[in-house]
Image (cartoon, rainbow, N blue to C red; front, side):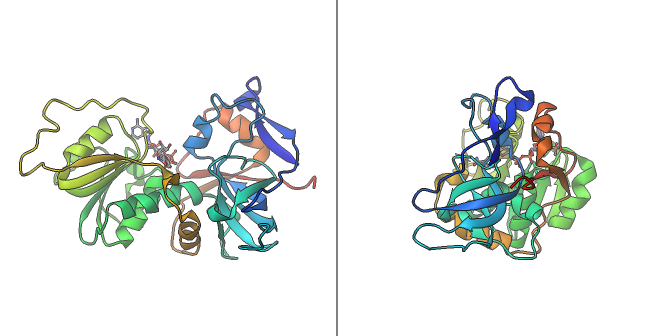
Length: 308
Ligand SMILES: NC(=O)c1ccc[n+]([C@@H]2O[C@H](COP(=O)([O-])OP(=O)(O)OC[C@H]3O[C@@H](n4cnc5c(N)ncnc54)[C@H](OP(=O)(O)O)[C@@H]3O)[C@@H](O)[C@H]2O)c1
C-alpha cells in the first residue's frame, strides 16, 4: 500500500512510498483511510521523527477487517478514528477499537475527518470546567479547529460564551455558532469569567488567568502562539476576589472513552466543522512545504485508492 513517510531530504519532509500492509495487533481493526485533516500536533511531530515514520493521528474511513475478537464495527462499516501513535497518512491503517467510532451514513468523509482530535479535545475541555449552565466561559483562539468546537459545545451546555479571535471578519460566524460576545483581544473583555479554555498561550494565557473569578480555572489546551508566558509580580497573590484560581495543563489522550465521545460527536448533524478546503492527498507534502496554510477552515486530504 501507499503511505506518506518522513524523509528529511524531501519537500515537506515527506515521501509517498510503498510500505508493508499494516497487521492489526490485539484490540485493533484494519481500516481503509478515506480522509484526514492534519492537526498542528501532526505537523509539529514531523520534526525529529525517524525517517520512514508514517505520520498522522486521525481520520475517517471504512473497516476492512474487524478486531480479532469480533467486537466493534464490521467490514464495510464507516468509522472515524484516532490513533495516538500516528500511522494515519496511509491508504490503510491498523487502529485500536477503543479509539474508533461508528459514523453515520450521511456524514461526509471530510467532515468526519475533522472531528477526532479537535472535537474530542473541545468536549473534554468543556467537561473539565464542570457545570457551565448560565456561566460566563471564555474561549481564547475561538477560530481554531478546537476553539470553534469549544464555542459550540459550551454554548449548547448553557454557557454564556465569550469568544476571543484575532480575525474580526470571523466574529459573525462565532456568534452564529453560539458566542454571545466576541473580541479580537482579551484587553476588551471587561467582566470576569467562571472558566476559560485557551488554545493560544503566551500573553493570551497570562491575560485569561487574570480574568478568572475566584475558584475558576483556565485550561491551557494549546500553545499556537509558540510564546513564553510571563506572569507579573502579584498575579498569584490572592485576596477574596482572586482566591483559588488555577491554570491546568491538558492532554487529549489522558482519559479513556474516546470511542464514546467520537460516537456522540459524529452523530450530531448540527456540529459545524466550518468551511473545508479539500485537496487530493498527493498535495500533502507540497502543502506542508509551504507552511501548511489554511484560509478560514480546515484543510482535508482525500486519500486516493485508484491503484488498489
Ligand atoms: N493538549 C492537547 O491534547 C491538544 C489537542 C488538540 C490541539 N492542541 C493544541 O491546541 C492548539 C490549537 O489547535 P487547533 O487544531 O485548533 O489549531 P488550528 O486550527 O491550526 O488553529 C490555530 C489558531 O491559532 C491562532 N493563532 C496562531 N498564532 C496566534 C497568535 N500569535 N495570536 C493569536 N492567535 C494565534 C490562529 O488564528 P487565525 O485563525 O487568526 O489564523 C488559529 O485560530 C494547538 O497549539 C494544538 O497543538 C492540543
